[in-house]
Length: 141
Image (cartoon, rainbow, N blue to C red; front, side, top):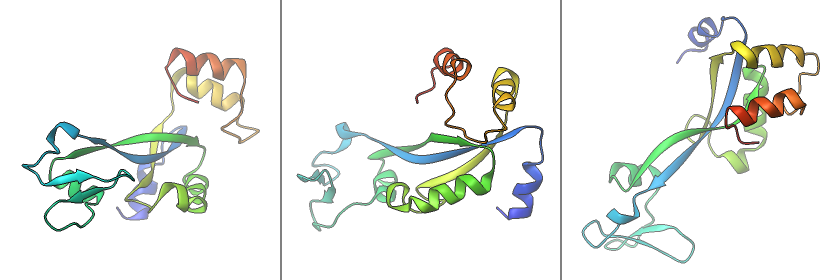
């Protein structure tokens, strides 16, 4: 998506930015002789016929895996989140393929808590209020 279109969509009240990583769920019950896929000692999937490694996209294409996005961290700005992801490319992988930054509108109790702590601009700030909110909303640390 063009950056100006994204910026327009992000012109909303109290946006927050989620750094998300792509995760895979492997359908191990489907990995049998019929699909010619096997797992080696390093948990890499290989095609039994060719002996070549099967990458994530091919796993999804063969319906051996499904992907979903999991939020790793929350940021005040897209620039901060993207810079963080790029600095840790060794952990997150390729941008827009293995990780992305997603904007959502922050409302309600979370908005109040974040606005109260916005002077610190540190999303890892820990306070009893934030800890209670995380616990009630089942948010992992």
